Amino acid sequence: MEKDKLIAELKAENTELKNEIIKLKLLNEYYIEQLRLAQYRRFGASSEKTEQPQELGLFNEAEVLADETPETIVTYARKKKRKGKREEFYEGLATERVVYELPESERVCPDCGKPLHTCGHEVLRREVEIIPAQVRAVEHVQTVYSCRNCEQNDISTPMLKSIVPAPVISGSGIASPSLLSYIISNKYVLALPLYRQEQELERIGIHISRQTMANWVIYVSAHWLTPIYELLRSQLLSNDILHADETTLQVIKEKGRKASQKSYIWMYHTGKDAEKQVAVFEYQQTRDGKHPQKFLTGYGGFLHVDGYAGYNELEKSGVTLVECWAHIRRKFDEALKVLKKQDRVNAASNTGLNYCNKLFELECKFDEEVLTHEERANRREIESKPVAEAFFAWAEETQPKTLPKSKLGIAVTYAVNQKAWLMNFLLDGRLELSNNRAERTIRPFTVGRKNWLFSFCEKGATASAIVYSIIETALANGLVPFMYLNYLLETLPDITTSKLPDCLPWNPIVQEICGIPAKEIPKQGD
Image: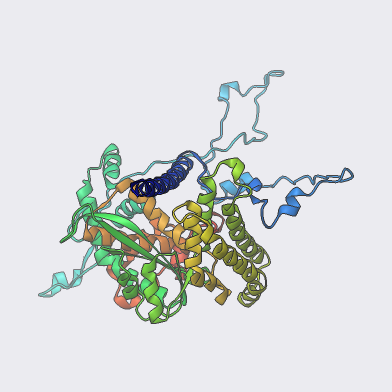
């Protein structure tokens, strides 16, 4: 009896130890995956572009494995050299011509000794010359007029004064529209922190402290840019397709919060087909879903998002969420990268990646064919929908066979859980397969954050959100940010509220004054 009890205890202990070993193996695999992914992120290419050998498994196996017949003759078409490339580069640049002459004493014919005359010029080279930032003082002088006749013959003399533009910051004595635009565009376009700008200005003989510059930015944002921001927000919400994203921000001094707590910048962008492109940033203390609900009050269109559950409550107010296939693709790409190279071709993660790649390939094909929105919707129903349905059928079958905490398990589970929202891109031909538009727009903020690290106070965070809104909207409409900011700061102090719409980026006058030459507008590729 005692022997049987001992055997039972030993068996139970053996089973327990085996389970512990299994857990340790799973944990070991998990940490190996994390290590490989960390190494790839540090040393590997950042692009998610799929390498050709990894694409064997699903859609192009026949093409890749097909043998070339010996009779195949390969011909190469000679690519014509593009003409005028250098000429396009210099187009629009002011040109200064430097002509080199021989001294008059040397302009003598070496054969007969008679004087030489100029018979032609040869341009040997053209160079681009950079003139660094120049600083000068501008005095605004008001002219006073009086009547000479009244001075001599009347008791009183009427006097008139010329109109002088109002200052951007009253009583500053230093801050001009161009100086403020220079500081703001340096920080928010070039991600140059104020302390570095302070140092750079010192080198050219101007002392402006970073505290002064920070106060200027907050003042300009609150007094002049906020009305434009509100108009942009109204224009944004008049659309029926939007994109949204959010990212972290550290604010040092927030009432009732520790400096180490994360705050958030939320970003909303119009769809690709909006006639007037708008990007609006908003600062909030948390990532709570109540913030997009409040911002989008009254909105009932489509909203491109990632998989964050904070947006889900918007569906109760009539918003249709369209989730991002690029996020799904990224998870399978990561699941593939944690594998050894020899194991990738036939891996399940490669199958999932190929399904996603096929959907994006179809979108590229539709773009090349220049389809109408209705035609795109029909083609998606015929070509894209079967691929998406096959993907989810595969994912639902694969999910029980994968370890939940493995990279593949996380990717498959995420896909299955987000199926309903991922399929919504089929509802309208204007919708996009990814939320990359929002990610591209919010990226300048994340890049800048790496340099200036944090906002000192809530006012500074709010000012940053407003300025980023102005700048990213300007870029989306083909404007030079510095020129547009300068235009606003020169114009806004002297106009009434009713004239504010004339200052928006799509106004023809604004486009003419602040527009980027057509050849220099960057392509908004996905």
